Length: 99
Image (cartoon, rainbow, N blue to C red; front, side, top):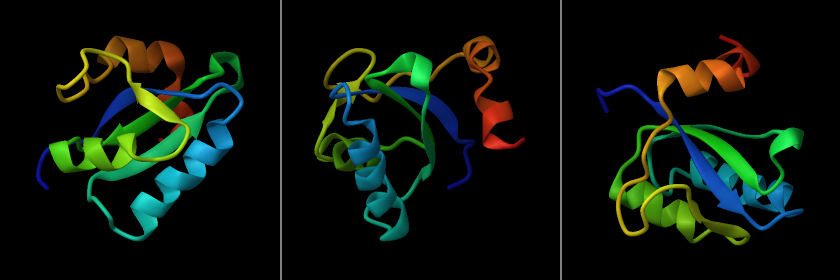
């Protein structure tokens, strides 16, 4: 894929962030749907995960099938809306990622 990965916010069952991360790891490692680069949880945002991905319909559907995932923040039934660069900077997601 030639376009850049962007950050998205995913709602998950509160207290089930680790279980959702494990399910997302399966998608990434087993190449179930290409495009997922990174997923992380932040203690100050319980019930949410941050994903860096090149979003496609196939990837969105695979992510939404992971147990404990509620759905993406944004309008249902459409590709999720990526965070703005200013929001990524405010959340220090690029820094936490290591670059």
